[in-house]
Amino acid sequence: MKPALSRRHFALALPSALLVSGCAAPHRGTGRPRDPIVLTLLSHYASGELKTALQGPVDEWNALHDRVKVQTKAVEFTDLLTTFMVRQAAGQGADILHPYCLWNGQLVQAGVLRPAPPEHAEEIRRGYGTAAVGSATVDGNVYGYPTEMQTYALYYNKRLLREAGVDRPPRTWRELEDAAYRTARRDGYGNALVQGFGLSTFDDSTTVGQTLALLNAAGGRFVSADGRRTAIDSPAGRAVFDLERRLVAKGASDPGVNVYNAFASGQVAMVISAGWWTANLKALMGKGYRDVGVAPVPLPEAGGRRATLSTGFMLGVNTASECPREAWEFLRWLNTEKVRGATRMSALQVSVGSLTGRADDMRTLLGAGGDPNLHPFLDALAYAVPEPNVPGAQQAKSLLRKNIEALWTGQQSVDEALRTTRRQVDQEVSLSW
Image (cartoon, rainbow, N blue to C red; front, side, top):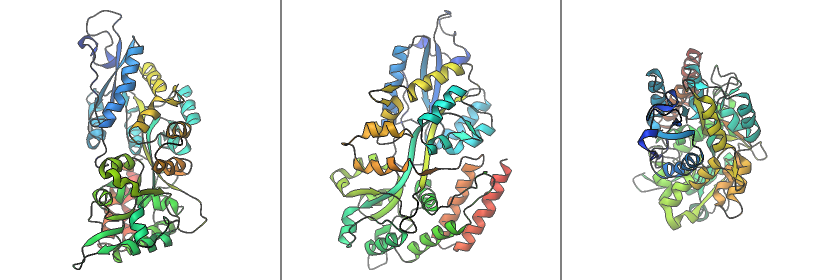
């Protein structure tokens, strides 16, 4: 889903006698009746800094608890959903799962996720923001503790805007277009030297994520409130598609460019993306990161009500786990118990440049000395709209991406893209119920 975003797998070095096959067989190993339960946790933290970040709290739990141990397993994000489904069908599902919240409806429908017990559900509703709770909820039931939470905002290159005579980041779509046209540059052959606004077909985070962030800012939504049909064929959806079509047609955007590399190298003036990118930009840009600013997603008109997209992950318990009580207790410890003013999961996410849905933790951890570019993402927790997680959400997102790309590349008009998206997504969503 995100290029260059580290996802590490932490292989916990427990003694071999403890590496039993999860809670289904807690006394396998030495045969002693006091052998500990070993819970397995399957995530996408397969490499890089998140693997290291996860090691700390898991090590801490295992050092503090004799009866229940946790062993982590990981696969790359692109294999995560398939792994959940295949292992479940084979009777090898992990006790604790870390899904992308977009998949929650599908996983619930397939009988993979266990609803949170009432006391945990209440803790989640009380401790997290509305968008985070919504992403972890399916048909009114909470299924897990929100972890990594991503909101979308406008990244901009201060130097490029300043050189084009733009003295502040845009606050409205008219200002956004004006800044995009003024900063865009091409060579004598028509090749893009600088994109004014970075539209890119590279991945979902740019193609779909920023489109939905603009849609939410315009008061629209992708899927209806009841989850049974698309809602993008609306005045708000048309306005977003019109905006993106103009940016491409007038040369301010070049969808064929990898916006992640291009922004870091000063070849994109503005782009809408999620907060995870800040850590990557720091590493890629070095001193050049001082040119990066972040502002809220521009609104169609001045004075409108702010909104943007949020995506996220959560930790939940498998229906097949034979030790759900112990699994939920570990999740409560990781996600709600405060250490130096914040939960362990919030500290983990901030250490890698990300956020959770616990705004109080984020304010404590970021403080006055934190990266100011993270604060617009923190502020957006209060008004973000969660990505829809109905049973057919993953396929619906893929269909939307294809139609957006067809619009950008001139294969479809705005009318055609809206009609095709509505027909395809309505069919997909209806089949999922």
